[in-house]
Image (tube, rainbow, N blue to C red):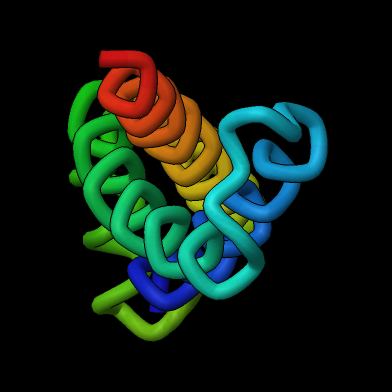
Length: 97
């Protein structure tokens, strides 16, 4: 369940970053795809660093607490936004060469 939340938050984070960073936006569809990838990857990395093991144990036990949901939304959104910014910067750098 946490992975699904991270993927959705990543898509939202990618689109939010694309709206803020107009010159790095890839369009709505690609912003969403990159955000989903970034949300999944970033969410898993940040979840492991921030102690996702305890939250994963609670999720498998049948309950999601509000802390793990907030952590999933935050890490997925940040991961999606960061990956979009990186890919957009690479795209812009390649276009200048």
